Amino acid sequence: MNKIKVFLEMIKFEHSIFALPFAYMGAILASIALNDSLPSWSDIGWITLAMVGARSAAMGLNRLIDAAIDAENPRTALRAIPAGLLSKKEVLIFIVISFVLLFYAASRLNPLCVWMLPVAVFFLTFYSYTKRFTWLCHVVLGLTIGLGPLGGWIAVTGAFDLIGLVLYATVAFWTAGFDILYACQDTEFDREKGLHSIPSRFGVARALLIARGFHVVTAAGLVAVWWMADLNWIYLIGLAIAYVVLFYEHALVKPNDLSRINTAFMTMNGILSMVMFTFTLIDVAVL
Image (tube, rainbow, N blue to C red):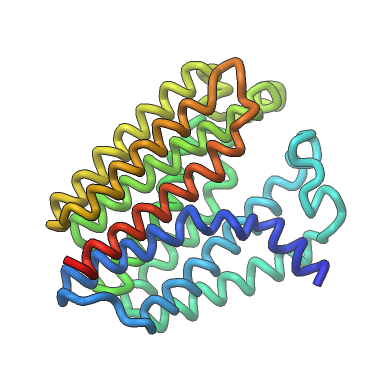
């Protein structure tokens, strides 16, 4: 049981609340567009397993690839591998099992999901290396996490669609924005070690402005989804709440005060994703 707890802590299982609700949202919107009904429980089940596999593999890869960097950073030195709680071999086995789960779940959905697996594996692996050579690493993370809602769309329809792509871009900018906020904690460490991030390249104050700009794009994308998917007023209520959450998230973080970064990163973004999923579901189920 202790080992399981260590694995769950390593992959930050509670952070699944960021991406999974948007994957469900993509599936719901796709199913409504396809046949004016909610997705089947079977589809939801396989989407859930695919997301768990993808996210677990991604986090395992990140911890394995960054083990040496984590050991030198006081903020991350107690993570499982540098702290000696898990061996690299154990984490590698965990990654393989996670990818197997992702592959099997995708195979139970449709052929396009299977064909998209190499793209998913590339992004899930590539992201962890990007901070070694580009400050656009946050955007790459966004493009990776954004595959969740796009995958939810493809899982139901077996095809690409403009609404699914807009939702993908919306979630990508949202993720990149809050990852910039999170990276502000390591600005000096990243500069010292020659690692790349928007805060280390432009400074914390400018990084916060860039993050706000990304989240303005997110706000516009959520409106575009409402218009393109022909949603109703219930969705707009959720959208208004999401806007308040985004505004408050940025109010929590100031260039000279990063003490509430975890609240801004974890709590606010978890609330936003759940709000958008819940109000989308109610909108299409009731109206």
